[in-house]
Length: 365
View 1 (cartoon, helix red, strand yellow):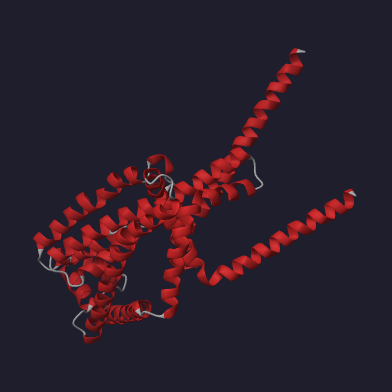
View 2: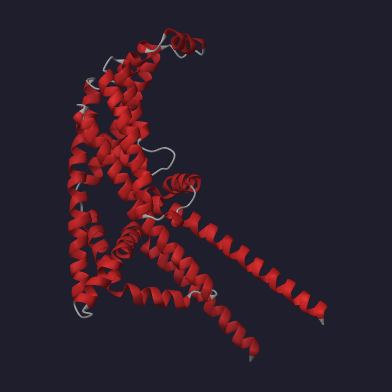
């Protein structure tokens, strides 16, 4: 009997593993859709709870209201910004092709404005081949702008797949918001781990998801918006596009929006526009640079942050493997990895203390 029971249990676990893998393959085409629907539901879950409390626990109506709030706050603004961004990408691509936007010329102007000592240093390392560098920069900018323009236009097209994915995301969001607590309870009960471990890992999972999306995206949006406004005031063409680039770069710690505004400030100073260059440098340092230190502790919390180097490496690695989804999954995996090893360290420390206490008791006896 014991042998048959062991065989049945092994067969059941094997079946559970097979159907779980099969479900992953079935959901693979909509992985991004399901992921972002679940992320939005997790972020808006506190809103759902407050609405449910006000409506006398009518969860379906509360879920409809929460879905409407999500559309107004998140979906519609992102759609409008994406449309405008696609137009600016196309305009920048046309400027690069026509030659009116020539990065090689800008680089040449900066080099000629450098002190003679720096020019001699560049010449010593064969970096003063300005025609060659100018040609390579122009060709590289054209290729990058063509790639971005092509991808942006393809994403911007209203296709059946895009509409289906969008509807599935909203569908998932609605039911996960409405039934999220019951679903999370079922998952928590099914996980074969110690209760304290489950609580710790689930808390870490929720914290990292909310911190990565709500906190980091909000900080990046503010930094990108401030940078875009500053460039627009200074008369830079495609300010919205550059602001979006700064927003993306702001998601990476130790890199940030400075990769955009610092070269522009250097160009202004090198070409004689001293007031614009110094003003942009001061604004970038004192305003854009301090947004992270001011907003991130408020939106994320100091005790929930991973080290900046872990966030940087895990975000870059996640994006390289999974695209935009890796922006969330990379730090999440890193956080769970650190949490699991931390739990192991705590368990070993607790076991060592128990062994030491037992040894002391035995010695006393």
